[in-house]
Amino acid sequence: MGHLTHDEFFTKLADIFTTRRTKAHGAVFLTQKRLSHNQPTPSNPPSSASPPPSSDPLADLHPAQPLPLLIRATNGKGKDDRAAKIKLSTVVEPDALEAFYARYAEVCKAGMTALKPRDRTKRKAKAKKRKGGAAAATAA
Amino acid sequence: MPYYAKSEDWLHQSSLLLQARPSTTRITTRYHLKPARRVPKPRKSTDADATTTTPAAPPKQQPTQTETDTKPPRGHLVLKTYDAHSGVTLKYKTSKAAEVTRLVQMLGTLGRGMAGLAASTTTTAEVVVGGGEDEVMVDVSGAGGGAGGGEGSGVQTPVGGAGAGGKEQQQQQQLPQQGGGGGGKKKKKGKK
Image 1 (cartoon, rainbow over the protein chains, first blue to last red):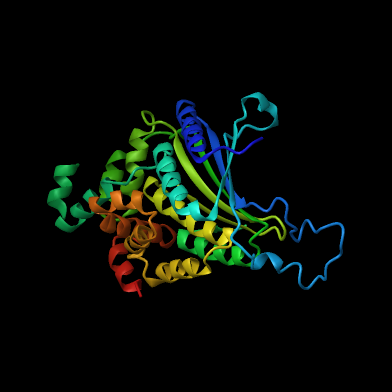
Image 2: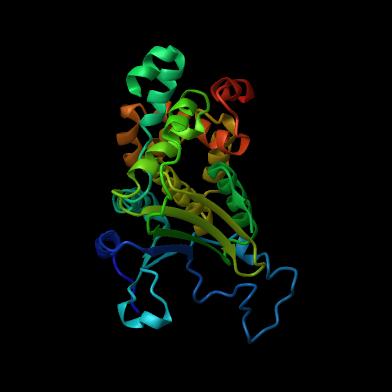
């Protein structure tokens, strides 16, 4: 599955959130990891040569150049509902991280509407607490 | 597989894990909806009114009780950092919409470390986080604005984001403590 551009990714991610809103349950999964597809990792060592074990596990700690990130999103459908599964993925280059996360935050904030909004009642309760019984009587 | 009570702790531990294993660690954000809970009944309404004045927790529960039948299902957000190589899992769970922007900023901070950029950014973020609990929101939004990614928070802060953020922190602290009416004062004392 090919990677999407950022614009496509955000559009489709917003779609996922929208469909999630119309249903009463379900989940959206967002994953980010380093894109290290063709690079040896400790769990996936190069098969040809057996590198010295001391240097290889630490090789990824200091990459010669910044690596891109792989961002994935799915709508949480598993094996039993494969047809309805939506998988999105995009690659973020290191220099585009800031812009990407700014938009990412907006899309997430706009999409996660079922979270608890900022609690206004608490402030009232505190004011009530300060003023004492009089305010409590009016509020109750 | 710990759940951290504070997102800052999660960020700190996750950044450490990322420093240790940058290429096998992934961060998964799960946003899921649960059908609204069946609340048996608003029990003892007079009692609830009476307790409203004293502790800080009941006022928070009261609206959910009364509005559950009309309200859409509640969403939850779980951040999970998982290192596939060692099996370490770090989690943070929240249901507050006010935190989303900040959490995605954290994802961005961690993403920088993940990409192999700028351990410096990560460390500054940690310093900011360690600076003071109440000022975290202000500082983070400032840092995000400086980095060019603070658009969302910049929108938020003028609405009194600092004060509300402080409240939110306070609420987070009160939950484990189960502190009663004196929660606000305790918070101020505990601040370092």
